[in-house]
Length: 385
Length: 79
Image 1 (cartoon, rainbow over the protein chains, first blue to last red):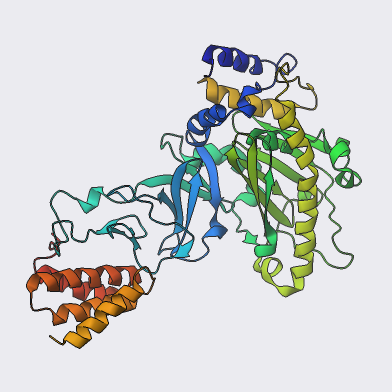
Image 2 (tube, each protein chain N blue to C red; image 1 turned 90 degrees about the vertical axis):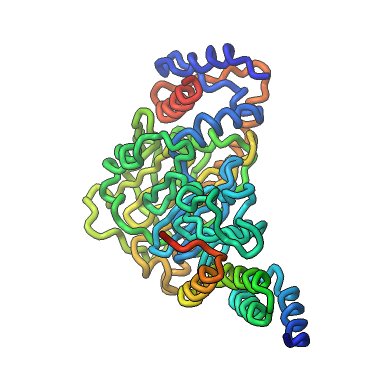
């Protein structure tokens, strides 16, 4: 049983100036009850990343997603718009779609064949009034459609607000959209199957965020990266209550001696050598560069297990799809996969460390750990109410 | 009623059960409806023909089947 007063005390210790603050208590990393609390207060309590537009490339495509216990259906409707509904028939609560597929017409419930159009409208209720009688005054199609979930697409990332009570998406994403105005309104082009991979990591989802948003560990964990982009080339990125991360002023990819990806057109000069890596709370890790972007969706599977879904995007259809760039895309995906694999032992090590009976959440470097502390404070405030 | 054809349809419907072949299912049910002497049985099969036409997404067939169901008092007429 959770001792809520002890938790409140521990969370209050997190929301202190960084010099005095402690990290989030171990309980939040080591118990199923903590993930249940976070599910309600964080993942189902505001905007979070559900998936990617590239998961439903064609009109009529639909993908069922278990979003921390909420059965959702991500689909692209007949007009090309991405929508999210509860993946549940309004009749008897049957799961509608069990596996990804394309719908040429309606979505038919496999139980009693109630049918829904891709805009969620209840389209048919066969035999609802008796055999062969397909209407009944007790069932109003206008009010019995699929339950919509607020959603929005930004840089191909699909965000949902299960609660329905979060601020408007445009307002929520505005700080990052302003920071990345050079990228935010551009189309991005997914690099195909080779630019998509997952890592199954034995750690709490928060540890993946914490590790991503600070550069402090780079020289120790990523010597390859550090050989051309040193610790002192990095800077912190901090937006209170929204995101944190790191940037570098030395971005100089050397995947090939004689080929490079084309850059986004018309970028300001600073991006010639800069790159930024931001954790959008709670579960999306983004990276932008002049010639490609990537997104990592964190899917908490358990309090001690997280699946990282990594997707790499390019600036135009040619570098994303053509055979001429296939080898370069493979090299780029390999490079990032190697970097992300290098992080696994530290996040898994921190997970193991949180079972130490006397670990108190840890202390922060006031200089190097402020992006991590910002994230901890955000979690604490969301859980503290 | 052509009992042999009715048996073939029944066999085909069982074989296609659980498949995604909505076009064939819709066609078979519509044919079955045409073979039924009883109005209730006709409406039953027309209902299934309509549902599978919806699944297939063929608007012309959907409209035609909805008209037949409305005329048979099997579907409310839109206001």
